[in-house]
Amino acid sequence: MIGVPGAGEPRRDPAAAHGRHPSAAGRSDRARSVRPSARASSAGWDGHGARRVGQNGPVQPHPTRSVVVLGSTGSIGTQALDVIARNPQRFRVAGLAAGGRRVDLLARQAAESGAEVVAVADTAAVPALREALAAHRSTARILAGPDGVAELAAWPCDVVLNGIDGALGLASTLAALEAGRTLALANKESLIMGGPLVKRLVKPGRLLPVDSEHSALAQCLWAEGPPGEGEWIGRSVRRLVVTASGGPFRGRSRAEMADVTPEQAMAHPTWSMGPVVTVNSATLVNKGLEVIEAHLLFDIEFDRITVMVHPQSVVHSMVEFMDGSVIAQASPPDMRLPIALALGWPERVPQAARPVDWTTAHTWTFEPLDDEAFPSVALARRVGMAGGTAPAVYNAANEVCVEAFRKGRLPFLGIVDTVAKVVDQHDPTPAESIEEILDADAWARARAAELVGR
Ligand SMILES: NC(=O)c1ccc[n+]([C@@H]2O[C@H](COP(=O)([O-])OP(=O)(O)OC[C@H]3O[C@@H](n4cnc5c(N)ncnc54)[C@H](OP(=O)(O)O)[C@@H]3O)[C@@H](O)[C@H]2O)c1
Image (cartoon, rainbow, N blue to C red; front, side, top):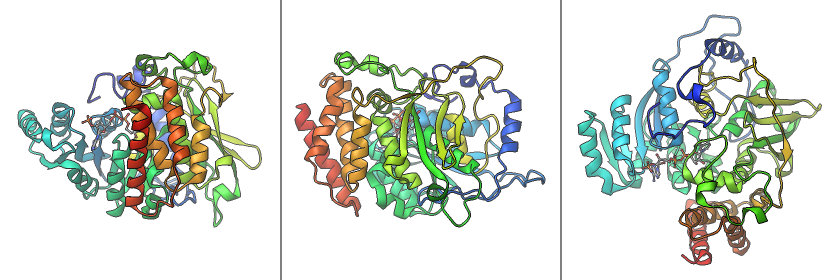
């Protein structure tokens, strides 16, 4: 594990955090990776990809994939580097990008991974980065500023992993897709903001979900086998069931969340993540964003996406089929599994994460979402159905409110209440151009800041 102490490791998964992985799991995963011509039909994710494991034939050698990791110093980024470091025959690092808050970590990552280029969004961090690279004996070239990060997103490589947090990830998503790169997408915000604009740029099989829920849905659809000329979603899928841990305040009424502090909101019961996505998991805005993400990735109507609260975070999502059958994907909470699958798609990376321990008893529970206590998901559905610039407004207003909450300037319940007000005051436009999306984003930020009282 390279990286920030505490970042990138599931709180309740110490064995996985130390790389102790029963080897049998890897072998069975390899066997299960045979899915002849499996593909989904959506514009966003279609499951295409060359198979290297013949149905009954020998395992072919894997060509090493070069990977650009954007947001390398964050929770997703450090876990991606861990996956890459543990699989040198499968992956190598081509380049790394970060914001500039942790230059020493970035330089150490560059030295350890052998990255040829590093990008840093904050130009003021360049001198310190240059010094740190020299101290760590890395000869990586530096690209500076947001344009430097976008240049790296388009860098020649096999896969770009976008692990930047928030709306700032949009430029990189667009740059990677415009350059025709395969994009492993953790930065859901860019798909949600960009919507149809991003989807138009996606070539078949080139957008791979990293979010554990969407990776799970992709795997469940993959298990369905070839869709033929029809579409899975239209032909055999009845609904997608997106699971939610429920966050630290699961089971509380709205009144019981009136006084929660940022520290309480940051204490997620099952996942260790960056600060914004952690607060979003407490308000369930993250689940709202994920419902829109599922709609966009799998081309399915909002009323066919159900959210179920599953506090153990082992079943990462499910697909219900027309005949009443449900296929679920289960694994202990560890983002290295969906990261490894996205980087190695369509093949599984053996021992990417610890599997469920079938020698002990488990209780997995599922309960409906309390929409009254957590109105963020219903609001996201409304916003997603409105389409156009509305999702960008929902996301931008939320980012402003989360920051205000973390700084003690907005109560917890004020986050979603304020987002709802901003959304209600917005007149969505079609979001056909990047300018239109960025204008809506800027408007929502300004309006939310006014309502929060700066
Ligand atoms: N963490 C999870 O388990 C998880 C799970 C599913 C989805 N996601 C999604 O993955 C994304 C990243 O989440 P995270 O938890 O990894 O966030 P995080 O820990 O806050 O990390 C964010 C990363 O982005 C970098 N960054 C910030 N601004 C940048 C910019 N302008 N250009 C380039 N890099 C920039 C940061 O660099 P500095 O170090 O310089 O700040 C850091 O490396 C989010 O969209 C989140 O919703 C996360």
